[in-house]
Image 1 (cartoon, rainbow, N blue to C red):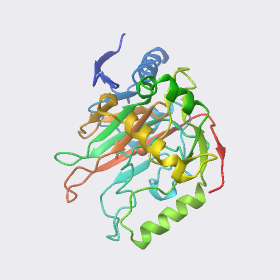
Image 2: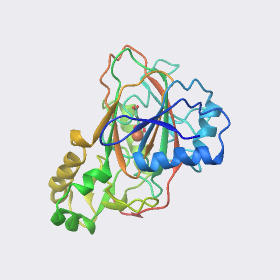
Image 3: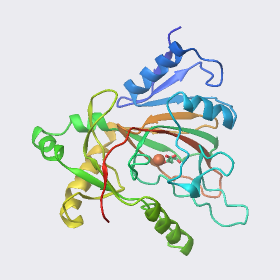
Amino acid sequence: MDLKLRRLSYPLGVEVCDIDVAAPMSESQFGQIYQAFLDHCVLLFRGQDITREQHIAFSSRFGALDPHDAFPSDRHPDYPQLMVVTNEAQADGSPSVSRYAGRRWHTDMSQTLRPAAASLLRSWRVPEVGGDTMFANMYLAYDALSDGMKKLIDGLHAVHFSGTRKLDATQTDQAHASEQQRISPPVAHPVARVHPETGRKCIFLGEKVKRFDGMTEEESKPLIDYLNRHATRPEFVFRHQWRPNDIIVWDNRCTLHEALGDFDQTQNRYMERTTVFGTPLGYAVSA
Ligand SMILES: O=C(O)CCC(=O)C(=O)O
Ligand SMILES: [Fe+2]
């Protein structure tokens, strides 16, 4: 049976309609879903009232799952394959460690030598309005560059840093950032990346990047800022408004995403994410 797809925006994303991701699914049906994922970069499944085990099982069909050793603070205590993103306070009343997770343009795990292939984010509780997430298509962003700029970035490697999350400058937040930097020292990745499955070129950058390898931060900043601004122009972006029990799957190799935080912080937002390992990329550099 053919999948029923509904496009979510011009640049990227389709809703996969009338599917229960927890129901038995043949190889050929999953093959169609995987092809839609490669073609459209972002998939949305609505109304998935599933268990954590089912979320993990569906995610595993996309590839081996990351146990999040590079992010122990945000891991679910009972399920290492799940990262928690929430503004809900911890049991002892202290602020959630993940309350600012994803609040800048980024691609998951790019601060490691095995950046993520896919991420599958499931919404449990969402605010009445807002708390949206934006996704940008890095194939389109690359294609829209001039030949001169393509040639310039072709040889460049960008240095991705850990611990760049927005902070309230509390001691806990500072300690968290230092710990993240210790776990994941900086790594360099190609700025113009060839997607390992589609073979298409895309911009691989985002706001974890502070400089190009072999250049100073001061020298790098103007071009990094330009490329991030260009890559996230509205015509490359889809903005998702969450409902409870949505699952969004995105391809981290050819998209950037950002959580907006545009909501009443007295309301609860609670999400869980699995992360599918990508192929090894890049090399370690000194800070
Ligand atoms: O909370 C969100 O909307 C996204 C957070 C994020 O960056 C992620 O889960 O990878
Ligand atoms: Fe993310």
